[in-house]
Structure formats: structure tokens, C-alpha cells
Image (tube, rainbow, N blue to C red; front, side, top):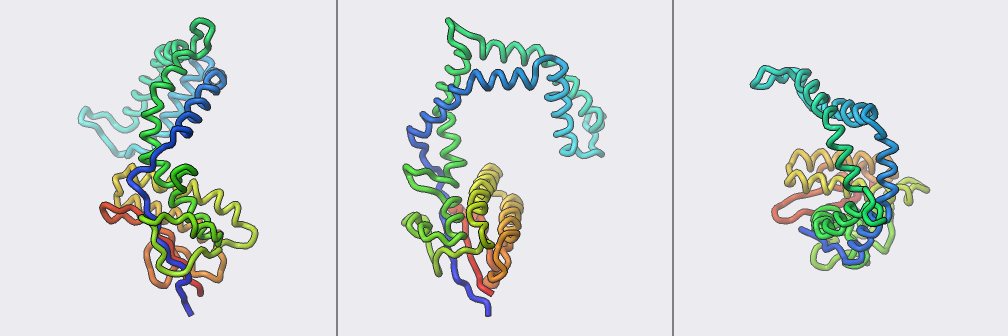
Length: 266
């Protein structure tokens, strides 16, 4: 007999503040790796030939599947014509790219990558603003509390700590508690993979303006992943709300964005 053993709604806030310590770590880490990043870039693209192969030809291969093969522009250019022109334009940009990289990373008064480092400092507020309106909305942090992503991973692997992480004003337990739905010896790997998947899906949905088709697709991605690792003793996870099925789905009901999880025992 089917039985709902767990049902929880996890809120996803409009933004989650980036702590000062987190911003400082981003600035320090980016600056500390500046010289290494430049060396890696130059190693990857040492000359014009590499630029044309890696950047220009690589871009064409990435863009080609996105353009309808039957497309014809107002100027009578086919999709193939557009790809050729775009590739040619990128290939002529090597000198401009090379000069910008050299300018950004050249030593000033003995300090390597000074302009790059200064730019990082100027971007600290921009970085914090972006991360608190996107990634941190899903992950949270240790300072202001963890978000829906980690809570969901703990919840679906039966860790009681998940209940203690629930946020009073945004989360709601409608039935049961944390339950381990994952196959034996897979809990650690499951959590390690689920959190970034939920974060990526959540950010994509946010960036889409909560488009229904994006929500549907990302819910399918998440539930396909869970169902591939779940125990047979629970109803298969699927991407739509169903009283007889298990699910882990994003829901947008303006102005509320949330993650809802239901586990059904079979």
C-alpha cells in the first residue's frame, strides 16, 4: 500500500547575503591565482594558430548546433554563411585579444598582474551581488544558514541534521521527516552530486525568469538523477507533483520560489 512518509517544502529566498568573509576569500583566491591563470592561458593559447583553433574554430563548433540549418537572414545569408563570417571575424581578433591580455597581466613596478588584481578589487561588490542573487539562494552559507540545496541532500539521505537546518519563516514540514531514499553505500556520493545539480538547475530557472518550460526540464533532470540511485522500496521519483509518486521539484508561484520533496513508500 502506498504511503507518503515524507513531505517538505523548502523556500528559496529572493537573495541570500554574501558574507564579508566569503567576498574576501574570493578576492584573495582570485588574486593569488592571477599569475598562474595567466601562465595557463598563455600555455593554452600561445600564438595566433592556437587562438584560431581553440577560440575561433571551437566557437564555431559550439554555435553550429544552435543555428537552424534552414535559417536565411534578411540579407540572404544562410546559416553556413553566417558561421563562416563569424569564424573569420573571430580569427582577425587575435591581435586585439593578445594586446589586452598582455596589458592586463604585465608587471608594474615589479608587481605582476597589477591591473588584473586592481580589477578584481573593483569587482568585489559586483561578484557579491551576483552570487547572493543566484548561487547563494540555493546553497546558503555557514554564516547566514544553509539553503534548500544542502537541506534537500541531507533530507533525502535520512540525516536528522536536516530537520535542525530548516528555516522558520520559509520551510514547512507537512509529513514525516528526513528519509534515506538512496541505495546502500551511495549516500555520500549522492549528496556530493545532488547539491551542485540543484544549484545549477535553480540558477538556470532564476536566469530564465522562472519560465515554465525551464522549470519542467530542470525538474526532469533532477528526478532522473535521483531515480537512478534510489531504493526500490520507494515510489520512483518523477518530475511532477503526484500524490502516489515520489518527487523533488522546483515550484514557482509568484512571488514564491521553492523546492518541494515528497517520498512515497511502496
